[in-house]
Length: 434
Image 1 (spheres, one colour):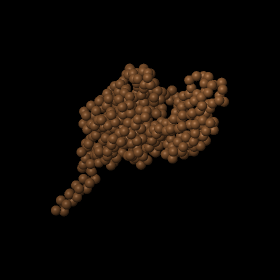
Image 2 (image 1 turned 30 degrees about the vertical axis):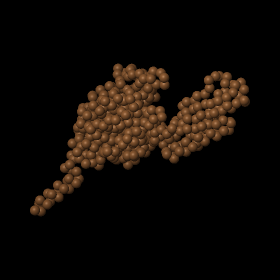
Image 3 (image 1 turned 45 degrees about the vertical axis):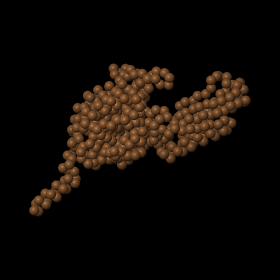
Image 4 (image 1 turned 180 degrees about the horizontal axis):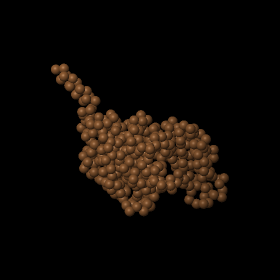
């Protein structure tokens, strides 16, 4: 009787600890599965690279993703945010839900890489025909996440909980429309089942050597806001400027004044900030002082309080400089992406996973990037972690690197294996630990 009670107690203790319910995760099997799927990942990447699609038009890409996920045994959901594909892998054992994300859209850029699988696609943009290219590496992202999906499906018996894969449209965004991540969050992608943590990667951004994994806790990528300023003066003859109010001179003063906000009014020891004027439009004739000038630009920040301060200062600078010259300035803002925030606790917990894959190529406290990413919307709702994956070939001169959004952007495919292993490891290790 006592022996039976002892055995029962041991069994109950083992069940409570999960020892009988879930075998230990074997990283060697994970790595072997990643290596085995690599040729298919390369094939997917080249196929996707040759067939890029613009934001919210990623229909061919979505069809490919849905077909492959169904073959792997994932539950597939479509229809969210127009072209998104959501894959759900249930292990059949209780546990958290971990999400992995890849963005799918290309850019209106004419490719100049000379690759045999270079994009030949064309698209109408701004009233003219231009090329269409995966100039930001989203083809790499989709291929690597499909590879990780295959690895995780093969490891299902060693995991508990669920894996949710988010193949997202429109990271690059569409003017005056909510972007892909924002729409997916509003559509409930983080619910049913509720996501506990989310991971993603981005190739390039900085010219790190192939296979480098770089990140930082807290703000990794900047929040962005777009501003537009309309300066109104009074039109007159170019030979008689005193008979009017010249908005061109006022606009020039505003452009220079905006630069002093960062250089003289912002404490850059707390966080970086950038204000850039990107467009300036005025006049039709050389001998006419126009009545109006419009300009637009971007604001990048890493601190919410500093962001609010910058918006106030941009408005004040434009309005007061215009007033001093007898003109007026109307300032409007379009909120862009929030700061891409790596949850400090989640980042610390997952560093061993990243170190196992990247080894000495792990950079865990890199400088923040003033680029922006709509992965930031997920981080506003669940603990999230985004990392950069180096894709600059060994021996390549960083000074000659063709960065993301360049027509010559050509990420090294040797990084694909690192991406697959890292994504799969983050998901598997998180589920195992929890």
